[in-house]
Length: 252
Image 1 (tube, rainbow, N blue to C red):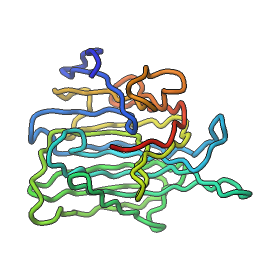
Image 2: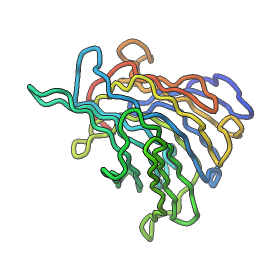
Image 3: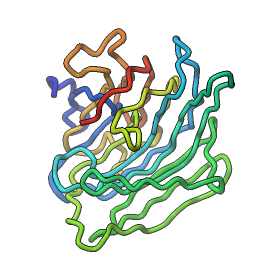
Image 4: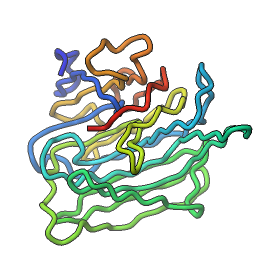
């Protein structure tokens, strides 16, 4: 982690780089976090400067994703993908989803056509820990009026979640079956609004907040072609801005 950047209402704000995450991560002691939520407008997939297609981006909030331990990473958000077959026009793909990951094994569920979330719609996502192995997952499309709100359970025998982190992230997802990080869709800028952790505006929390910049290679400086996405200044709202697609990279 880089040197501390600033202090905001009891939060120690630092910075680090990642090959597939961009946004803010809040960490604390075990059992410190019970909920996370944010609202954003689904961005449009834009052609990059090199007109590269077959790109991926996931925008989400989650709990338990940033510590190396038995993990129950619980997430909810949307995809902004851009595909192009030879001799065919681009085919952007948008969709709402949730995911429950156990020790690196991801079980993502697409909510399907009944819960459409195309570009331009305002999406509100919230994860709430109910105790034991239960989480409430809630997604609301404020433009179309639908709500998905269900309690989900991790399998019996799963280690209890540590509840020691919360995340608000734009991700270059790992491609299923090949264990490679996909090229990042040009989403322009996405603004996370009304970001709350434990029901409080993020600026009112005590703990460690880390701004995460997405890069192609963590051994190189986060600038030029190596810079893929960057988080804006932290407040109760903040932006994440796209810079480059990057390469398709191995995921360790």
